[in-house]
Length: 170
Image (cartoon, rainbow, N blue to C red; front, side):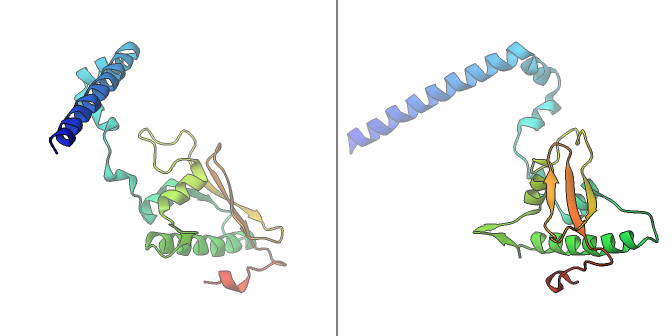
């Protein structure tokens, strides 16, 4: 029993010395690029490196981040886009209330943001390109797509000749 305690103690010392080397190397790297000096002068800057709960986003926050690009008011296209947007909003509410899964993974709104922008949280300084929803005429399917380089979510919208399937009805 003594030898086990002694081995654990030795392992703890090895781990702490490894961490010290890692911390030391990290500090040297931060010093080299000037980040350590910045952190010393601006203590509030350090919060960027601390884990936070701000990662969790709400439907309201997501809707605020991803702006829909609707057609002109009063057009048939706008009417169809509004119906698709309402379904999208309903879907977001279901995701927020943990009623959507993909395989064994419970979907979160962070997954939706990641699908659209390639990141699961809003950058500290905001997005360089504002995320947007663009509506396109459906070519027979209603599967959304995204372009993470331009922060674009593309939602197929029905037309006067092609209607939404019943399973999508509100």
